[in-house]
Length: 502
Image 1 (spheres, one colour):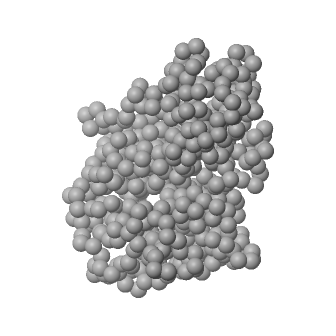
Image 2 (tube, one colour):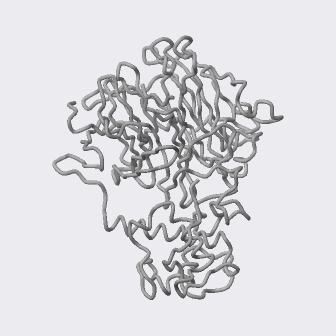
Image 3 (spheres, helix red, strand yellow):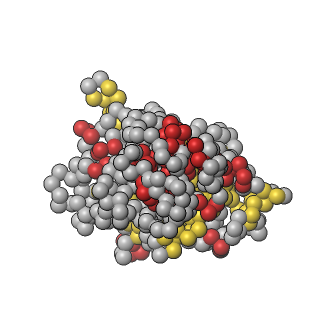
């Protein structure tokens, strides 16, 4: 089974790189970031940021997250050792941040052109710490596969967004894909919604429970509305049976939007799980495109939730005594969390979509606020400024104690989707050099990144897959190999250590 168990923005002085052109226009309210760049930056740095009157802003040394605040401070305050003037008072803080965001897009484009994508030599990919091969597990017969998880015997469950659960006989190349399981719940297959995550209970051998999350359909006032729902059931002779509701929002909180359902699930063992086979279940719900609701604890959206595996609410949840709040809420202020996993050290990790720029990797902590939409690393999709990553009025020290900043961010966005942790399988370790690392997918970026976190800080981030299709899910199988669920083309592949035989 897939065992999904168990603030960085400091201001730095002495930076002597020119970030924007000398002078600049007056207030540019309503301008897109492209217009802001051409008006204020291109004169010195060129339209592509590769230099001209000022030095180039390209190069791997410029890409680290620690540079975000340094770029912003240079735009805002200027650079004393150069002729660059600051834009404080001429541009708003969100406008100045949007220039940093745009620069990150230019830098990523330049690096892709210079470095390219991971490539195999003789069928072998060489990453910084491991070599691997890639094999196709399922190459046809799927329609928008969304997630995979594994039964103890190695069979693989696959969800398809239109509303189907399929079973693959081996989880390996050459296995057989079943017909759809009969009787799974009806889903609202609209926009980004449908049948989404699947999670096999850690004690499946004793209880047979399989969990599904999906966009649940309702009708209200003649309109179709929906919200993320979680159920569990058993698969018996190709049929879905014994269904129980684990989480269902109040009917009045279903909404008509077709985006941001979140929908990932992860189990956590309790001190008595080995005896009573009882676990905590964490799951995510996106803010459904209604961003202010992420801060409203009387609404379920934009949250990470925590319940017992039977749906009951633990009495030590942070908001169980708050009037009107959803008692299941564990954390709030999330945009669209589509990656959720417990690391080998017991920390809960989450990835979520930002808007244009600013996808996040967060350590999810009890009762904390993750800032959306008060703060954001991103800008509006049409290129207009939105917010800054730091709360208004607190730019000098880089943050507000009430808002948890991400441990890492992707700029530009990769559309973070799918997350797991590399761990040993029963037969040994397929990727011993990656043990404990996170593997994080990206839809729009078509990427899988390996992320190493030590003491709550990212110390390595490496792209190991790019350009094979939209990455919907990343899962570590029972054998320790890394499975990647792709859309466009719709297929499932796995990364296998070079020395491991099929």
